[in-house]
Image (cartoon, rainbow, N blue to C red):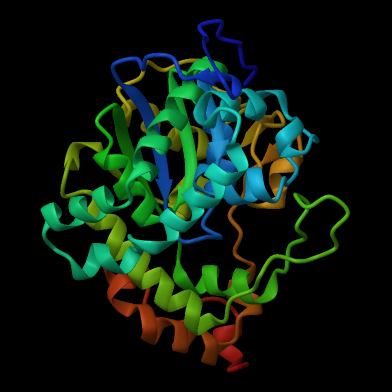
Length: 347
């Protein structure tokens, strides 16, 4: 969406110069947090939702400190992160002048205290909140960050596709964040096939020919298990703000699925960027991390991606199924191998 500039700045002048201090926060910020293991459709779903009037897609905002500030990756608008007018203003309001040192500190805090496994191994919510408290300034900076995004982007709803269960828990603890968790699930055999066989270019690193890091079928399957269980634990605090959506259901009826998400958010139905049930008009968003498809624009027809059913062999499907069968049952996926490859026994 096009963003509007807020003019409510407070300037603090001291002996070290002039810095921008964030304005007083508004009562609550509504954030739609798309959580789930990668290669599950979060990029296209986030882009569609980000084009709803007064919604702003921020992509994987969890990575703003490292991929944004420290690595200066390309925003999908084409500018380096530090040159993008939206992000430059957001960072200024969040961190002030000494933002590189602050960004390094934020990365250290993010990676040192709370991990996804803690959501599974620490059933006591008070103990988990204590871990967030041990992160010190990190939580406060994250809260300021979302207020800055809301003010600069003029957003009523912020769409965050960071996906990490642990980061979702941090957002749940912030008093001024009204968090809605959209749990996005895809058949783990399709996910494993994508991670193993589809090496996508890192278009967000200017001049780079590097490819996105692949994952083995075993790692993908185990992370799929861990993350989906951890995301379900996010439901414990506010179950009415949790929604499960299967990728397969979304790509079958994308417009209808999008409408159901708006209802989940308690938002009025409005004009959606759909030409028909499957075809959608996409503009370039302001995101600095994630799937390289975020750099594209124009009309797109959303269709199920079932290439894994032919491309992934019988033995591989059996192995992924053996590692993920409880989740296959829980989310309504068939246990037996799928597609023509299952008839030929290819490994």
